[in-house]
Image (cartoon, rainbow, N blue to C red; front, top):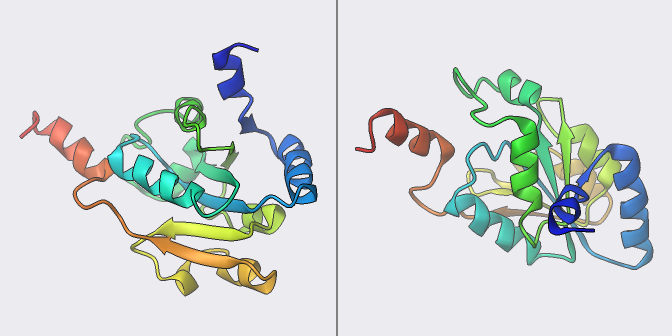
Length: 166
């Protein structure tokens, strides 16, 4: 398997991911789950994902599909990058074990299926406000809010590009 095939193998359909999760759980691996649009991957995202990965053995990233991003009303022209590009970029990060797309506005159903040991979101969320909090806590897991890297957001990068870099 070449490197690109290896990266692509980390992008899952649910049926395949459920088998992989079963293997990880059998091996007593601690599964961490986070989600987002990750439209333009930047320093804030990379730092956040690295910190999330430190909380367990396998990091699963639920990625909002193009349809899901549009439902979230992120703004005209969003997503900027299509879901296949965003998934490939995320999967290329060595600390990301799996990427799975979801079409819903929230990853609630996906979290119920994954049953992660740790659920992670960015610092603008209090743990008890995070979608999936009840599911994860009911199964003895933990919910963690990771601080943002100040000054980095897809929206601010998009605005800087539109203004000619000023």
